[in-house]
Length: 203
Image 1 (cartoon, rainbow, N blue to C red):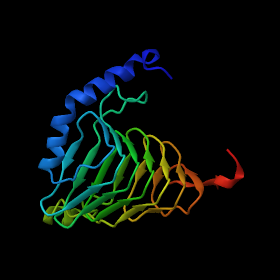
Image 2 (image 1 turned 180 degrees about the horizontal axis):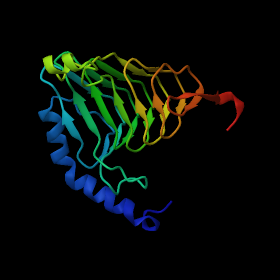
Image 3 (image 1 turned 90 degrees about the horizontal axis):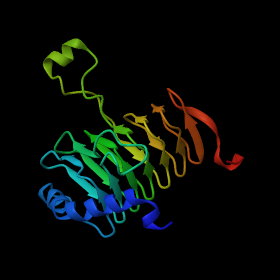
């Protein structure tokens, strides 16, 4: 594919180069080590709680700008930690478009994980379920770590909730709400997400 046949790609790469020094400073300010092979289109939103840890592997692609993907992310990529002990770890060669990651405890993402436009991965309920508990501490929602293993593909507009492990190579259908563990090598879809089929059953 020739770049002249896709002029929007030229525009995206132009703005990626123009914004590169500002984005690199943004990551430096938040204490996130810059790695080789990153391709970052548009400035992400980073909210790192002091003392928490965010690590990102090599070859990662973040698409935050509205025109950087035909599925049109409706907001930038968000990387947020909610407590000083929280952790977000992202492996190598992953891709995120308008994805929100919020960790009160831990989100661990393996290698070659792709997350479609406008999906959210949050290991916390944010707020307590009981009214009295909300009055006492509105931000003290339940939380439990999320693990997404290697080669997982998450479709657009998905919601992955606390305590979930998604097994190697599985696919999460667009618009799914994942509330329980997903075994390796399956396709799940729906709300709540359920197994549709195994991947070895064909395309």
